[in-house]
Image 1: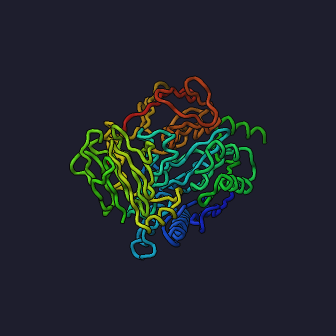
Image 2: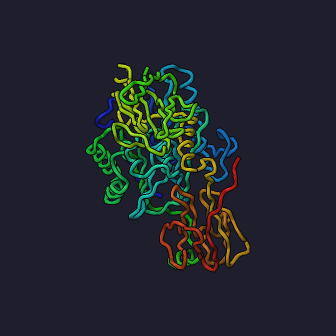
Image 3: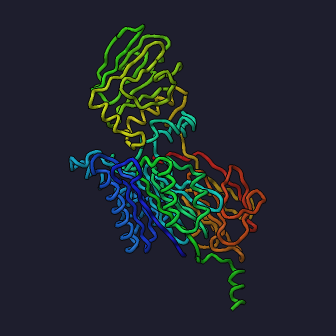
Amino acid sequence: MKLTAAGLSDVGLKRGSNEDYFAMDTSTHLYIVADGMGGHLAGEIASKVAVEVVQKNVNRWITESSPEDELFDFPDNTLSRRGNYILSGIKLANRVIYEMSREYAEYKGMGTTIVVLAVMPSTVIAANVGDSKIYLIRGNMIEPLSKEHSMVNEQLEMGLISKEEAETSPLRHILTRNLGSSDTVDVDVFEVEPMNNDRFLLCTDGLTDHVPDGEILRIIKDGNDPEHLCQQLVSEANERGGNDNITVSLIFVDRLDRERQGILKRFWRFFRR
Amino acid sequence: MARVILVFNKKVIKEYPFDKESMTIGRNEGNDIVIDNLAVSGLHARIDKAEDTYILTDLQSTNGTFVNDRRITSHRLQHKDKITVGKHLLFVALSKEEQAKVQDTGLDKTMILDTARQKDLLAKQAEKRGMEVTTKKERIGVISFIDGSDQGEIQLTKKLTKIGKAETSEIRLGGLLMPPTAATISRRPNGYAITTTGGKTVKVNNQSIHESHFLKDFDTIEIGSYKFQFYTQEAEDKE
């Protein structure tokens, strides 16, 4: 399996500081983006703590092949073991941030979103809390692999408001879930089978508030260098206003050399030798 | 502290201090701001304090809620905004400090509304439309074999279900030409999708699929001599 990845975080044009944070781990193929919130420096702390807690713990569990019942909180039996590592890592990060915000006055009310992507030859795991997003770009289509946990999205799903109302609603930026505001958190986790040439995008709302999905698709499918594409996505968001911090992380998947050949292909290989 | 001033026929009827997290407006007793007029719904609208800002939400009222003469579903209130409910007007007066904070809080600032309050808000909106929030049940996919196997029906409880010869497959299929994993079905934000992975032809409704395909209720799937149908059913309660 060959992965080419890049990440970029930009303060945008209107904000004084960058409360986003991201990490890419090329050995365990773990990619994380978080968008922090809360006064003073609390937002920056929350996103950094979330990313680091998830990265450190998931990597440790992977290295030690930890059994699922030794993780933080109960495992989810609809998920693979790796899926449970990520679920558990996010729940742990939530607890850490929640305790910090209760313990220290300067961290009161801090919180963060998080998106996590783990790539393995047989499975890709996508997990999220809040309104940061994960997309799969496959051929000519773009598909969300995350759920938006905002008031507006819930109103939309319940049929209370129209799509047009959703786009301008002031409840757009009101989250229904985040890391840090409660001692437990519900995480959405998805698992999909990767294909060669799949492209995955992790991003904060600084990108998606300005750049529609169709435009994101157009930009990403026409490029071939993740680093250059990250810059292009950030520039696009800034040209359209740059109201918020913008963070993007792009992962290109290729040469999935997993054992998946049927018996015919194995014969074929045998004769070719 | 912010104040809400109720005006009718150009006369101030009453002033309400905004001394709690949320205030409701409506005809029924029990609202924080009671307006006894038939043009006003029993529970008409509500104002929530979210960090440093005030958010007005119409609770699916019959005659609507207007801010500065525009009908709104929800609106972030500014100092001196005029709210119209029936023939009554409500003016929002923010303190100097609050005005500055509202100015500082850009429209794109992300905030959290605590879960209890947002659930309550959604429930009230839904109730007005005769919807029940709590009864929205999850749907779960089911595979029902038609041909080639006596496995009957299998619920797709996993996020990713592997179909093939491998022992680790959730749905095991035999046969000399069957790859370890012939296809996978994943449960995604937009629904269930089937993906071919083993180089073996997978057909949905008699059409060979390439890469991924989103499944609809009663789609027929064929892998080799196996044939099965996909459909979704209401999931049983988890709790």
